[in-house]
Image (cartoon, rainbow, N blue to C red):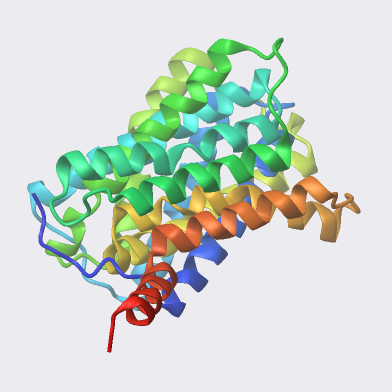
Length: 311
């Protein structure tokens, strides 16, 4: 389907993945603030629309080349649907009925779907036993940090979040094609959120109407701006850079790191307490990520093989 790429994760890719997890970890908080005043489609439209304005400002300021073919823009529009319109709407709607912590747990299933989808559609990202075990161990760590959801949580809202993660998995695989198109990650991010904005605006207007701007509180405006600029514009520049360098499966590992970022940010800025399950969960996530990366485990395996090989 796409050209083969080097899917190994170096120090730079891991650093970008951690920064991306912090930016996306904050998005659950920002949505949690905005959803108390605004309906879901309005929040998502503001998010992608403001992000598009910011990204195009950067592109025009730096005089970056913009794709001119119908094929490229059709791909960007499809990416906007898979990576923005479907998952953003489902997650925001879901967070009306379930807490952000549970939404973060469900969002962490993305690598599970990602491994399956990548195995089906990408010849150079086939699942291995070690990678599959790593995803399962990492997800167990996420559940350990937050605990199992209560039985009375809204099932439809949970299914909505899971639908969003499946859409993210397909987006990660579909987005591989932008490397062969030689489109700058900033331009790819801008094209994606622009396509999403054009699709969402008429839908939002038809379903929810125009919001009353003067009645929106300063806290909600601040959350919308942070959601658009940090958790969308900057985040998707990193997203496409990681996708270009390390592949779809590695990229989707960010959803295992997002809950860790959310927990640590809460401890640093909201005086939330870190308990033993949090540290145990982070340890399991670290083990899972190392298994998916594979290098440490291959080194240990080679050392053991050398010790058992007769001289």
